[in-house]
Image (tube, rainbow, N blue to C red):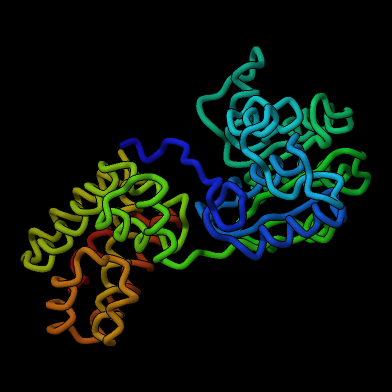
Length: 363
């Protein structure tokens, strides 16, 4: 089964097409029922936790064409079936616009002389100005024009100041939803003009059950993905739907196990291999370091008799064995060494020397 396919989330307890996040949904539903909407929201939370999904569900509720409940002027639960909801789900609604690094790259690619290969690292003023050219228009088919600004933490200074002008004088019939990792990652002048809605990681069991019930994942696969995701359903879905990613994780753990039995000369050879990975596939190297750090953290957790909190749930027998013969000091030292190596690589220290120190220093 293709786990990345859109699932029918209409059966969720909240009635909104999103897994969990009951408190944020209840707050948004109440504002819809009482017609106490604001013109700018800031949804925060770690990557993959559901910020974009909630923003799209909110846009659906704002423009749903279903009959509202008695005493309400508009629905507070999106039906998911009307023309408006369907078009938002397909990404074709004329009044719901997404602005992010990906749409910025597409805009540049469509502009003669400005094409670039892939998204930039920051949102620039041109994409905000392009948004502003339409932000004051009356909705075409809905009650509201909704702008979902993903990667709001990547707004550069010019773009932030330009965005601030829109927030200071919000057009009627327009709602902006900014998405960022946390409130401090955007300018205080921007966050102070938004209603803050914080999304937190979900319970592991809720994520695993959702993967099985809604996307048809196998139970063991779902439990592993839910644990590795740290309670982020979007990231868990990515893990469960990409077998090659899980295969890379398994390979990284196998390499770590082999490293523990290598003599110094072979460890140096391994460092040279990792240094080449830093040059050719840097993201893969950082993923490998993340896996290694998570493993040693689990060793500490298992040694502390809290194995139910371990992330690598499919490796518990091996973790138990390693924890039984490793001191807390060694496991903690391994974590600190991996973290220091990552910092050094970010700071452009000679990668071969940094990785040699890592491979020679790990237990």
